[in-house]
Image (cartoon, rainbow, N blue to C red; front, top):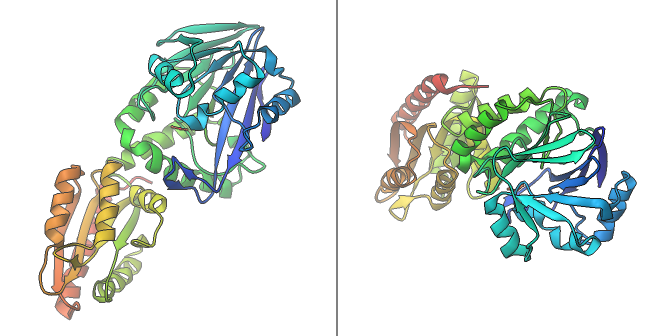
Length: 407
Ligand code: FEO
């Protein structure tokens, strides 16, 4: 567990977590951090929680002691968000100390009670404050549906620190460097990519609420952003706010000048057109990601499609419908509400079509409002004239993407 001083009287405990599926779904190839913050005035508050996977409260006790915090003197446990990655340690913490008060929103209070049987809870609303003494004053600002309905920001007025919980978070394990001003250019790229993966996997469904939370953050004077996952931003907190504005636009159809090819092929007919497409994209200087379904991880597929302005669906008809692994990927993008992308589909059929009809059904059901170039279907292997039509579709897609490109 890392222990870092954020400011006078404010410390962070952070733990890298790997080899789990985040939310039981998402493969986190590069890990994730869980961050907890301790604010000390005359009274002491701990914001969200982190406990070793050993689940032993003494591990937490020892780590707190090493930063000069006596766990028995913690008065308040602030639950910014009840999801158990932040709160799953509460029952263990009760074993260390039995008389702290939980502070959270009304929604979180109900869940803290139903998940952990807690009843010593103080409910807070927008703008409520908690004076810890010695200049440390916390204020509370609900940001519902980021990512669960119970979430709130906690803001420390003296140091102008925003404890943002899931907002402004990222996947990616922390190494030596935990603050934005310490990062090498390579690490900055790494955390931007991990931020995109985190946003697309965990937050994208809630983009309208994320946008409201961004606006709420802008009403606060912020010197430091200290999220529940990922880096602490103390040099340029506006960077992660601007990144989140950009990510929210990716969820609404913008993207980098990149194409994701979501493809599958039973016997290599559609694959021939994919190969042709790659040559066109290379010739046109457009970066692309070729994701063969179902071999790609769901986490990577969602993140890659999310960040791309253009999507090429290369999938044949299978039993009168769209090739199932590609249909499943599109349904997942629908669940994540990754809307407004510029798209083009081509694919082979044998004795009948049907893929196109199912594609339309998926788009209508998910209401993704993707902007499609006219699809190309071919019987069996693609002939020369089919490849010419594919090329025309790819070029039209590249042209249309220009309006949506945001790097
Ligand atoms: Fe970090 Fe919504 O959990």
